[in-house]
Image (cartoon, rainbow, N blue to C red; front, top):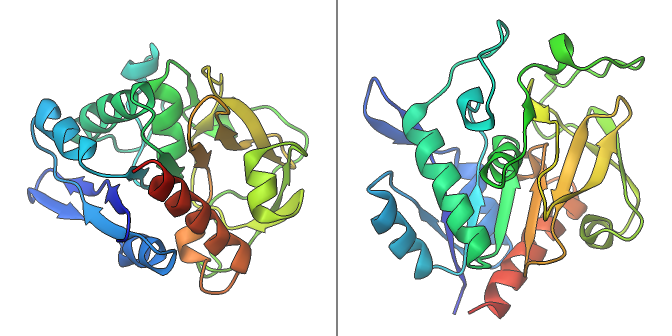
Length: 237
């Protein structure tokens, strides 16, 4: 039986509508899992549903409200979504405390870090000082890698990817700043932006700043990330 993988959705407050790019579902399905779209209901009921699933994937989307990491809004902060922030941060904290396998993508890596007490750069261009400036908001097709990431040699992600140096796509302006335990930095881009966090204290808890769901059809190593996640979910059943 395929592992059941809960997938968080974007939520359009004005239209009262859930939205999700199909690539997320297709990537999980291609890796051997069965995708389950998660609704934004009462948090206790959402966690009850998650307890019936084998893993949770936190997807990309808008900015995380800096209220959750003790900061005032920066002038470069983008649109925030209070419904999504509250549900995802609490769900992620529950998942981590119950050792439910977790994969975070783009916004998802940020949710993982904030849920455990970490902070974010609200805008990397305005707040992060570095000599090398990488364009983290590419205009190339989504499947096209635009910059490199160096992975830590003994990291989970480097074993999955089979290499220490990979190339990824990029569609973000926020990033992980202070990393919350039990996470550690497992990969950075050339300008120092944190691209991967992971925990060795959990069955599977990996967050990546890029969008592997847009790349997996063209780059085998990105499919391997989803396969590793789905396999961890299978073993946790």
